[in-house]
Length: 238
Image 1 (cartoon, one colour):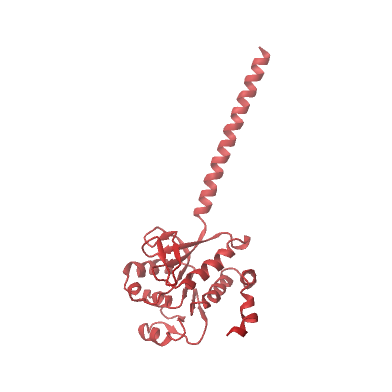
Image 2 (cartoon, helix red, strand yellow):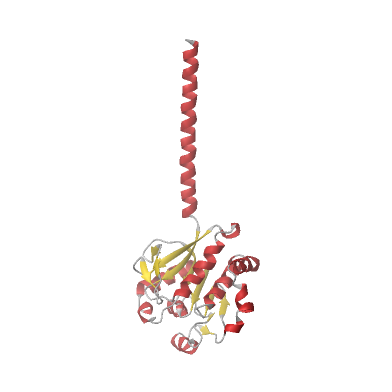
């Protein structure tokens, strides 16, 4: 009789231990899910015909940074204006994580460009999205003529910005409430970081990363991606 009671106690104890472990696993899963949802989001807008490097530069820079402990709370989110799969001007297919219709909480908003910006500038849903999230975001970046979207939204009125080299005067004429700087790779004014686009998009991304973390951290990622070798080693090919 005593041995039966002992076995029953052991069985009950084992059952309780299994339940406890299941509860721990369940709560851990919920915690991890909530933590993932709470990640600070860097939203990069994409659309059909977007210029590839305007998008891949910030994805690469910030994506590499998120692997580091000092930037691991951030998450890069690619946001499409309409359809989830878009094709860049140079033929790269990109699958977006979300669209501008989704409920998003962005700490950073980055706007790229296309050769034909008119349909984007007349897209009220996109401009409203930029107004809403750009006003709330801690940082807003643009590459190339993505600055025209920023200017169109009105959230950078009174600020200094730049655009693609050669397009400064047209941008200034179209949007007199911003001050467009010429012959400069990127401009930082408050929370706005605007660049010439193309390969210079990397410079803009590193500048923004430095502001979001530190110059030392941005240098670490630049060296990791060998960007520091561009100026020092490639002059002979120009």
